[in-house]
Image (cartoon, rainbow, N blue to C red; front, side, top):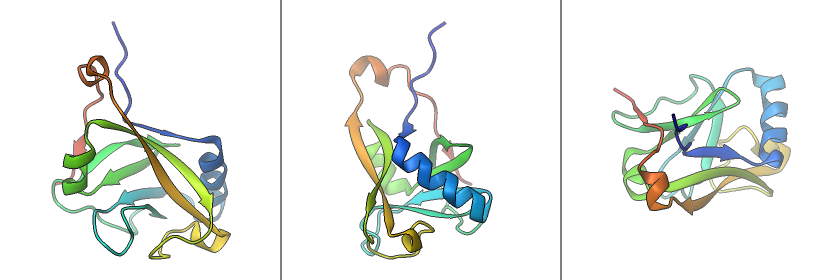
Length: 127
């Protein structure tokens, strides 16, 4: 049996920031909106600090923390693998928990191959 292809991963740098945030805040969640203000950058919140809209997509977890994507943005990026990374500096919006650390989460996109597309993990949709 072939294992399913994941839609989400994280760099070591991103994991280090997540571990730091876990120590301070506990359970986390990520949400990547498709709006103008945050520039479609992923935002990190305390779990329950943000509620996905109906039919938004949860594409996977990082350290057990759900990563949600705006339903319209997912339609555009559904053929891509998301790698969560982090960079120095302040991103637009400033609501994300890593902002006080002088960091900003970002996503690196890589298109799936036709073979990978046939074996992707399913997404979960919010109701």
